[in-house]
Length: 438
Image 1 (cartoon, rainbow, N blue to C red):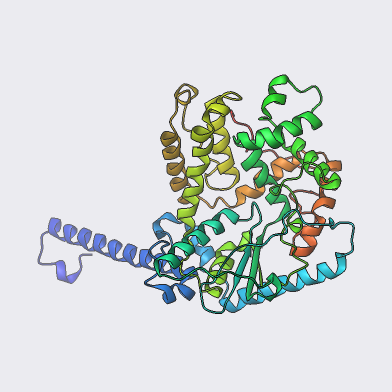
Image 2: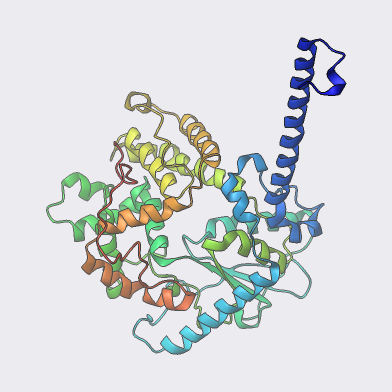
């Protein structure tokens, strides 16, 4: 039935008016929903960004809401309050103190940490000293970049550097970040061994092939480029139990920073970085804040630049550029930057003389597309399930002993079910995080 206000029009005119009205209504509703979504996405930084309105040109308060998946927006709308985050930090301190008291004389502790020095300190406000202890594969590269930006801002504001001569135990803020131990180990393997990195291939890869691969080929012994995850786990167990050929990227977290010697103010977890990092940055009066999208893109860009530009010649002596680029692509899927449904877009013929810029452009496009798909954070656990399923249970049990102190000190599961399933994993998906040519 035609509405009364349309009765004076012709039948065709009435339908045109109705159509116009419906289009306007849809536009208004879409605008309202978009605005609401953007507000939800900004909530994570609102608690402290207002204090630095004029200071944060280097790090926008949050990425563009249109680049964030609906699931991520929903998760951010449930962010803990500042008081709840503070309570969680206090609980972590208590867990650490309890574990230190219980295990300080345990054989699980090595006699001396491999990295006992505390680093990256700065005085952002008068009479306050801040020290951060960086641990590899827990976001330390990001923190180094943030501290570099802070130093730049301080220089621009003519704030002179201050020599900090107080011992760590007497400083106002002392903090570090940790990470779920089994995931940290896989991340270290993916970044330094699986993905092209000729420095680690030469230093660690060759050592692993020589000691843990019977009948290794001369090419593998010379390059160290094709270490498997089970071989890597054997190396980690050996290096930690014997003290031989240790590296900061692969040793347990408790072997860094002398966690039981100094009273840490904050122990952040990489798994809750979206809440922990803003809280700590506010606590230390940082003049800059963190933009996850920017640093994520920089990580991707650098990951392709390292093997395809700075190490190009040495990588080509061990594997094709096609394999090298595919390994970096898989690493980004393991880390959750690129959705697993997005295949490597270049052909073997195309990658023979591929430029860094071409691969970077393809990678950044895939990252942007991934943000619009379903949440990729579950890929890390899927990749861990696949990787550790290749390790025999005897070695997994030995690795548990190596990582036990990390679990006790930082509140992580000693035997995560995706690493130690009650029954062997029988379900296999068609996707593999380690098969380059599916």
